[in-house]
Length: 207
Image (tube, rainbow, N blue to C red):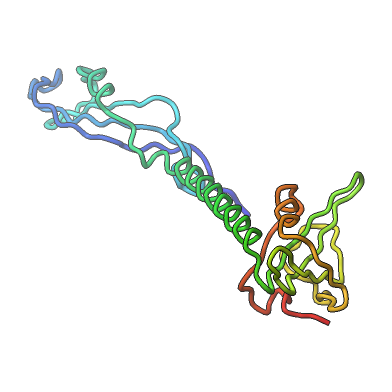
């Protein structure tokens, strides 16, 4: 992919000042333009670059050498927010991801605290040399415990859905306390909880 980036310049403000006398034609009236360079990627402004510059133009003879009031107009001209578009978009994306992760963690904790039949837990198990992933599925929910099914396969990398050859083993059931589920969550073993899923991830398949 070709990456288009670079430095561009844009006029950010224009003033008409009729109190400045042109040294060329002796008429009054100057158009004062303030410019700002900015860094862009794919022509999207990322952030301002360098200092603002100014250009003064006589409204009658177009002479450009008059420099009066330059410092005044530079000082009152603010850099427009749109020149920070890239930074704003990046911060918005980061904020959205953080909020989404916080909400996902809250939902995961709620699901673990109140398990339902057919909930699926992605389990992460670490040892000194490797990390494995596998799935538990809630078969039954009792007052203070749950009955779980174990997935047939284990994975050596993070997965969000079952492999085409994976399924939950009906004969591989075991019971744990609900309080132990909370311990699994707090220790990081429960990596994700799926509820209300569709057929595409194969979580409904038992053999």
